Length: 280
Image (cartoon, rainbow, N blue to C red):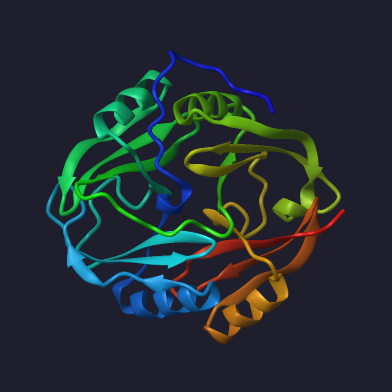
């Protein structure tokens, strides 16, 4: 396992991958359909639904968590226009200390695009990593207690060759993580371009997994639109549940490396990669 270095040493601030949520923005009229479809596909449960102000300036959004054994999502259905830059952040990462996390992010090359602010249950901030990758950091006033995950999802980050190394150095140093693999010639079928290759970097930390997909940006739809990859035990069975719950399979199952994967669109437009490991 290789370790990336960059910036001064800082204390770990991650809590655990079950607290790291993909942020899903859907139209209010599609909110319930999306939540029901995603929960049914991955055997999930939901938090109570409510309407809240979750931004530092006035706004109102429907909000609900969906807990599944393969990853957690935060769903937002804004009833008002969405204040900038919200909607561009891909994930929310729970941290042990907001001030320490923001200081560590800055120390390792992140731009704090939304300074810390109070929300109904804690504090939030939005940071941007090299390459334009926006992530929300959050902290709860009352300690959260989410069940451990059966499998840890991967945050799928598409970057150019110009900025990929800077992102990896900054994020790995901030997250106190490691580079699990760095494959220069990964099979292009994984990005919808069979017969070609691309660079794939896999990271792990206390926040979970990050897949860095380094491409020239010549991507067929829907590659690059998915935020998260979910690992399941049986891909075929999961896709049957997804279809029954109103989702569409955009890319039928294919083999890439050591996994079989597919791309799925849920009601409301959320695109996800779903994969299952294949024995060598």
